[in-house]
Amino acid sequence: MNPPDPGAVLSLWAAGLAAAVALVATWKVARPGFILLGTSVAAGIGILASVAGAGWWAAAAAFISLLGVYLRISRWAAMPLAAASLLWLDAAHLPWNWLIVISGAIALGGVSSEMLLGHWYLVDPKLPRRALKILAAIGAAGIAFDTVLVQVFAEDSSVISPTVLIGLGATTVILMVGVWFSLRVPSYTGVMAATGLSYLATLTALGAVVIGRAVI
Image 1 (cartoon, rainbow, N blue to C red):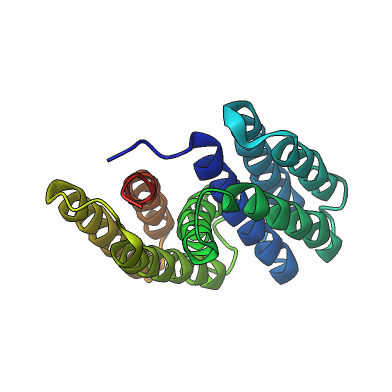
Image 2 (image 1 turned 90 degrees about the vertical axis):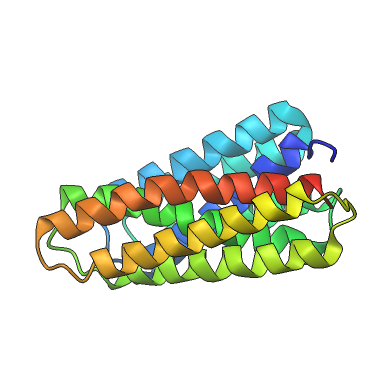
């Protein structure tokens, strides 16, 4: 099992998060501060990707995504974020198949954006919870699809790697299901519980994606 390219892993994470924030921007369910938060985190991950070996392409995408901060008062913020997401996907594509890149981006983007948006709902708990449920569903579907794809493309025949990978993927799906049911609780504690579960899901999803790329 060889360690995966850190620049590529960070690039696909930034791509997924930027795409998810762009999607939320089109829904206009959160205040401009969330666009600032999500864009800043995605840009930070993108810059780390550049430092880790993804090159200037990933750094350029980070600066493009930051244009969304200035456009955060409208759906126009989605445009630079979507453009940055495509650039990060391209930066992550070099070592892997396109399907593997896209599935990893969906998995990490869905789960981590749900976690970030959950924090914003703690600031404004009266916002509709449908957006959180959709992101949780995207994250769960993405990690399930990614786990299956990795088994198809895996080149490492060891026993421990597939076992750990499937375990992390299944745990992430269970946590996202927990997020979904927590959000059915009408009180403030429902969002608090969902946000806490999404913290854990972000860690397990990242572990699944990293291990998955190590066995491909």
